[in-house]
Image 1 (cartoon, rainbow, N blue to C red):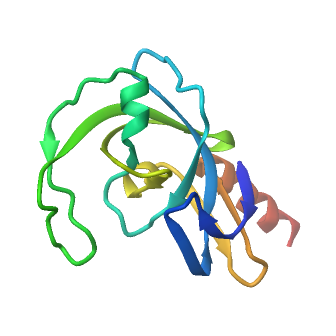
Image 2: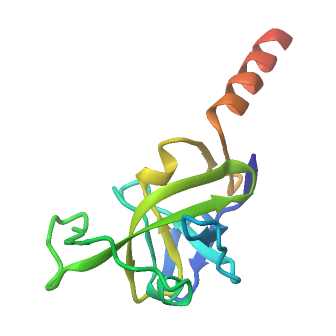
Length: 149
């Protein structure tokens, strides 16, 4: 399990009100070669796919695995196609996932539902805190709480 405080900022891309979930992630190629830098990641529950900084792909010398037209919430396609890459993304106690991601010029990672699908995310807006873990962890915690009542 991993957790933290909700944030108002993620890299230089986002200044959010209300606060958002931001966490540190590591990115590797499929052979396990890890990018030396950690990256701030914004959780975007409305994004189908994860988006990473193009610099990660350049530094890891990744070859594109196709092109696509990622659409925003307004369903508008970008003016040109965007390269797709396969990477492994890891988050502290929430494990790793192998994903097809889009790479664009940005300073932070946008974690989409493709990454979140295998995890449980709890947000407490009043306390300004969040926690993320694997479903098995949460099942054990819920059963433990129920057994105490």
